[in-house]
Image (cartoon, rainbow, N blue to C red; front, side, top):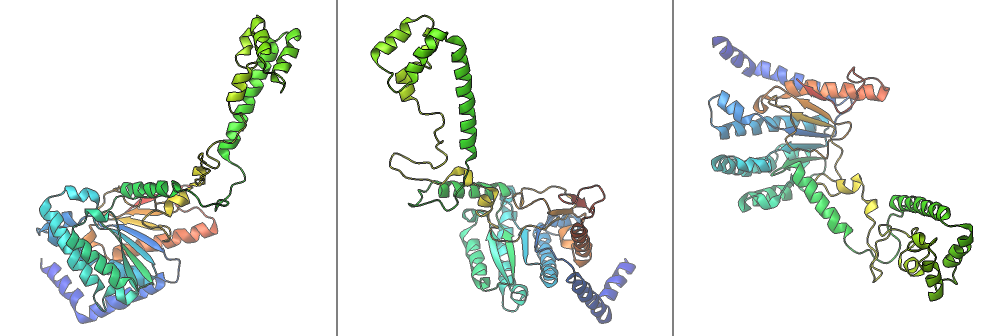
Length: 389
């Protein structure tokens, strides 16, 4: 106990604090010399466990977590990171006790006010706040505080702080799909489509199947028809065919009865659409010639443009603390082939520069290896691999 108190006293002494500050600035400056992730996401897990381990209130554990967030944000923005996304509150967290949920919401109002106050962290680094999530689930007074924070920082353009509250990836993707359906259900203005396709996959597949079916039918009919009846079959397909006498003649012949219902019936041929006609998906038109966008033009980029994080840089690095190795429905769409996912065995309130620095250094090393075309993790896999520390 005495050794711990001495260590605390030593670290808080002015000379040691000054030396640590200088070392910190030196390390951050070194980081800026290499590639820096442009978008980092944090799952701030472990606040409640930290509170239980230290015998304090759970709300105080969340408060300690906010203090850790402020320190990490400063490191990120000072290192050159443009976008930081934090998982502040999940929709599933509403299942917790009402006391804890209300306390978290009240704390959010206070901490947001502290973040955006004059001369504080966000103003210093020119970062603006964005709230990502389902606004309708937030209490009016908390929503008012969030909107005020967004309004006060909207003029900042150097960096972004995304606060996901309340949020889940499934809700985000559902919202994006819903918006896409609404957009694609609107009639298009007169004129060519904004994005024209020279070939329609559905049209090509439809024509190939139609030709195969037509070829199979013609071969089957050729085998069934005798030489004496081939002329009759040709007459039935000619433009001059289709009279009542022709129909009666063909139906009275026992040799052609088996095929007359499909190949020799003029009325059936007239009523059925041609097999090579374009499908309705090429330019979905109604009887009033109203044109709708082609669903085949919907791509992953279309859904990305309807996500909360549209127009933001791709997610480079995701970090989750507390040793839990799962994504918890966070940024599932944004995790792409080159997203590095790191699980740290440290509780969020204890996460600081000395735990963050090795992650950034390793990320930089992997980026340099990829640029050289080398192996990144020693197993032939350069991307998409989660690390646990």
